Amino acid sequence: MSKRDFYEILGVKKSATDAELKAAFRKSAMACHPDRHPGDKDAERRFKELNEAYQMLSDGQKRAAYDRFGHAAFENGNSGQGGFEGFGSGSMSDIFEDLFGDVFGGGGGRRAQGGGRERGADMRYNMEITLEEAFTGKSASIKVPTAVTCESCTGTGAKQGSKPRTCSTCGGAGRVRASQGFFAIERTCPNCAGRGEVIDNPCPNCSGAGRVMKDRTLSVNIPAGVEDGTRIRLSGEGEAGARGGPTGDLYIFLSLKPHGFYQREGADLFCQVPISMVGAALGSDVKVPTVNGGEASVKIPEGTQSGKQFRLRGKGMPVLRSKDFGDLYIQTVVETPQHLTKRQRELLSEFETESSHKTQPEAAGFFGRVKEFFGT
Image 1: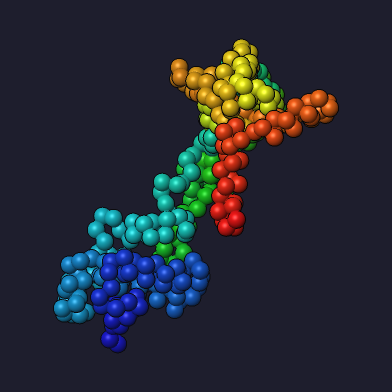
Image 2: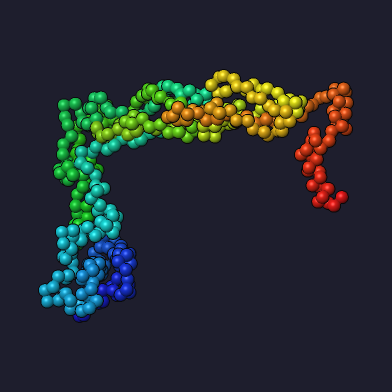
């Protein structure tokens, strides 16, 4: 029986690129892999056929020979006969790890290490602070419920006077190999669950886990200049690892309470300051508080409009891990007087009558444009 064309087996054209060959082989091999069709001889035959085709065509020299001479290029003792031969020292398993990762249990870099030394989980703690605390920085004590190393067994999980023994099923590797047809599959050891050790006499204090739950009190130093959402990492202060494994980390997530006077953008602060109509018209001096508890003076010039911003350099928040400071921006809000007396009304009416485009240039300009628009 004549052999099928390699390009036809992979379902690609003769002009296919290496990437197209690889993608076609991956798709077809996944579909007919023996693990998905146990006992199916046809699937096994098809899988071997795909292996041979990809082995030949993925090698530049072999592909060139095949394109010129066809299957005859590999007859009469030439290399390249199917199965797993012809891949050099890397073997077929290297190609499968590259193509499929650990979909079928491969991926040596991901294999569990013996001894059950599992790293503890990282933990999160949410802390709310005030803007003033963010300005000065602070030291705080927090109480964190977490898993800590069991003192009775020092984290081994075994009862005092005993110790874990090496798993006899996997020899301490945490992984076992099983053959299915011609293909070897590596899986987590079912006897030790990948730990590589078995505890015959578990510690009564931790039930063999090597860790127990406990409230821990920790000190946290919050630097000046932290912003909302800042994350502080406390290395090794998370959950203890199982059976003596390394400890995880604790992450402090900071949030800032809303402030009644300031709004913050980075290191800059913004606030609105109401001023009287007279103060805006004639000019005035305004005292505003600063976040450090001090006071700053702002000179409001004559004719200031509502919404005008004044910048006070260096009066904002400290820049994290720097000696620099942001700025404080004061925005004026001109307040319209209410509950006027009769005399005050008379004075304002008199002012309105005598006012002109010089005293109210924006209003005069606006209404002038309105007249032009309507042609009046």
